[in-house]
Image (cartoon, rainbow, N blue to C red; front, top):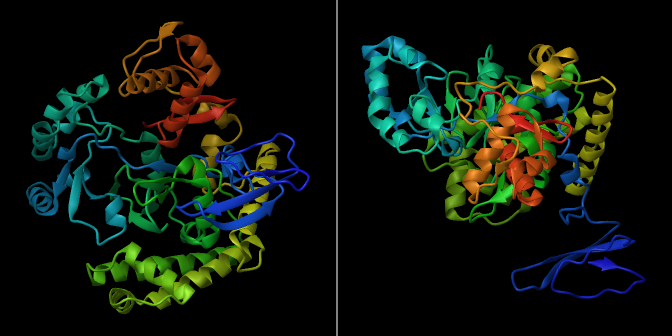
Length: 470
């Protein structure tokens, strides 16, 4: 609600004014009763009163480029093999371990992991996949019938491959023994390490780093507050959703010294080890239940009998202490005091992000994985890295005319936009001009959705191109 000359008007809709000199941010409950009121100089575009995180996330940092991706989108439940069957296959044909891998979905990150494997032929041609007959027949029997009924030509043609095999992610993971993951949608943000030989599902965000200090920073309240403000919400429980384009790509990591990295990494490893031990100790323990207890311990809320059992099984107080120490260590790396209110954390992060953007424009990039990123994305390599490559084995067999009719259905609209981005980088305006009947608002929303899903990426100048490996 905007205020002018001290007067306030109660209305049933959002009121904006271009020349407002102050704003009032009001929180209400389900009945409309006012819970709290906050006077702020301005409201952001997303109506939040804190620092303009929504504006900052529109500008990714080069320092984080090429490291985050969604996991594999299978497009076929038949790729998944239960543990007993997988071990029987591996005993008969040990070479099958090349393509039969342990598999984790989002729920496996929040509870004791299930005993499942997945058949991953990556980018193999059919003749190459046939070299593993025991699992090739499984995919042919359990996946191909479903793919034959799919309307996407590429899914029918390459029925033995995942729907999105993630070439870019595979390249980023080469040479690593482990990588960082987090469940895309979950009540409590928790980061874990997965062995490089484990395949992650599309419901998991993957970060191609094996550095404990990177996991430690991501696990801190500083990053959690950023991800809550930058990400979206999803589902009946309105759980936070971690999108790589908003939560990871624009996030400014601290310029930590080697000693600070070692300290943060050691604490991050301890947090991961403590949680893993707790999940393995009992199937009653879940990430949600564990952090529910920690939240109550922080606020001195009474624990129920069920909470007390989780507290006993998981030593929640010790995990809380590890997180507290980790938060202090990460804040020290930023050069900040601790603890600080969320609004101040976000203000500092946005200011740091903006400084990093200016530094990167001037040629200074603080790469997270310099050995991997610098040859691909720095200097002359940047043009090659951001230029779209048309992979004829994966791209839809579509050639667009200069003027193409705008499909009537959303699926058709998204498909034609992705096809355009696979051929050449395209902006919203260029897409509207080439697609007869297209509306700018809908085109923009579809391209943003594709970018959030990792199917396309912003290559600069407001243009989008199909992300490598999808």
